[in-house]
Image (cartoon, rainbow, N blue to C red; front, top):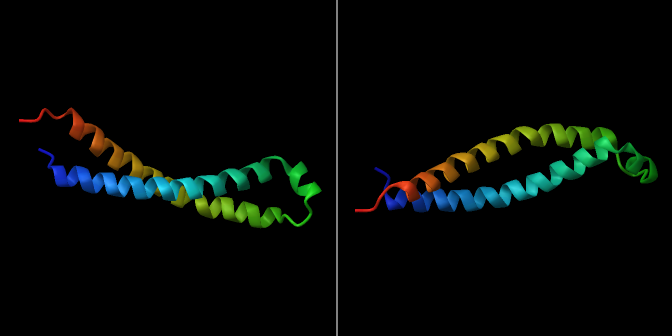
Length: 86
């Protein structure tokens, strides 16, 4: 049986992870877009595609771990709401 404190802890962790995933997600989107559409980097010569590739590759494991944490805490909150209250 899940306690209310577990639900509240999952909710706090989930909110923190949402903020983290938003920042990492924007960085992944920008670097991915620059890598896919190299026309942008040809116009903006100060963009280093090697650095973008490195950033994108190094951020992806963190994105996956944070996303997994969001999945787990989200499931905890979802299941808590399904349990009938006494």
